[in-house]
Amino acid sequence: MNTDLWGYVVSWLVENLGFMVKVVEALIAVGISYYVARYISSRVAKLKLKAPPEIVFNIARAAKWLIVLVGVLIALSIMGVELGGLLVAAGFTGIVVGLALQQTLSQFFSGISLLLEGRVKVGDAIMVGDSGGVVEHIGLMSTQIRMWSGEVLTLPNNYVASSNIRNFTRSVARRVDFTVGISYDSDIDKALNVIKSVLDRNELILAEPPPTLLVDALSDSSLDIKVMFWVPAQHFWSVRSDSIKEIKKALDNAGIEIPFPQRVVWLRQTKTP
Amino acid sequence: MLREFKVVDKVDVDLKVVRLTFERINADLIKLTIVDENGIPTSLNVSAGVDEVVSLKPVPPAGFKVSVDNLMIKFSDVVTLLPKRTASISLRIPADLGVYVNGVQISKVPLSRVKYALYGPPDLGVLCRFVSDEIVAKSLPQALGVIKLVVSNAYKESIRVGKVVLPLEGLGIYVTEEDAIVFNSINVNVSDPNYAEVVTDVNPSLNNVGFKQSFEGRRVRYVMLYGLV
Image (cartoon, rainbow over all chains, first blue to last red):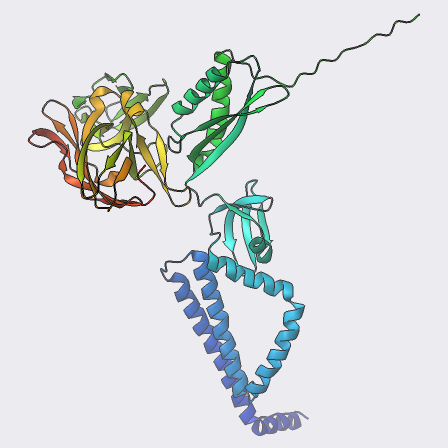
């Protein structure tokens, strides 16, 4: 029995020797292409190009899979598969798959668009829709943002590409706007001078463009002064907070009241007969 | 402003707008406390032996809380320059104070109110240290130094110059025998209202004057692309 089986295997190998050689050649082709792809990809990733690292990373990855694909096509050709027919079939399959994977392809091309356009880069502080944080990774399919609260938010690239993006890192300076209300009894000019001197004292409030103070509105309970000034972008929140605090203190010291909404309630008592 | 001393026990340097106290902690360390014009102290410990020399020298203005590469000088009045003319403008701007131990700078202290300015749009522009008449008026008088700006108008029409942005990297400082501060001169070559080359010269702003100390200026170029007013 064993002799029969052995004889069968040997005769099968002899009959299919040509096929077996082709399989080995095909495997070698795929293997070589894989190792070449890995080598080229790692060399590309290490190139010192004048391009953001995420673009270099994605080019390296795309090059790797392209070379592997070429290897697979060579392997199929060795195996005797007609590539022309395969490509035609792949074309039809591509249409079908394209329709089925509209969303995925949209993400993919949005990713390429984001990378090439350079609207956002790794390390940029951005707001996409209502979500804000620092960009940690831009892939071909999705973008990862480390939110201000620490969580990592992964956004599909088609969403990022079609959203309004506010990039805070691109600007060296940002404008701070807030409103200060003073009572109607207060001296407006005095209040303006007090606020101006507070802004002048702060090193981080830019002298150019100069701060702007506008008497903005006659509100229900207060006379509103709009305060606008520019600060270095990285100091935006701290300077905003400090200046509001300092303005409050300075107005208090100058005897200028910051009113709060007041409502006078009249209680009418009906006389009982 | 030029001072050299050894810190055996405690040395106080009161410069009115700022107070520096050097206090020996042990044989190897001194504590430097800087109290600014608002009375806010900052301190640092520095390795300096009893025999090591601490010196105070004027240094070109620089950034403190903000890193800057340029200085914006705003003129009190806009200067109108006719076509193909050159004009020299001499101004006084404040220097900062460098604190050195054995010739190595360990700290710098502003001797004027520190303000910054944005030159250009927020995304493409640069942040600069800012000097104006108002800041000069509130500076320590001994910290003010002469700077000469040589402005040339190569444009076919007259141009108005209200500010100059110069590269701090090329700014040098010289101290005369009388302890006066002099900066190197600056050439401003205006090609059109939105293109001016500002080049720091290697020569001091005052000629025929003896200097006892210098921090040599270098030829460095900055192009002003966002207007001169």
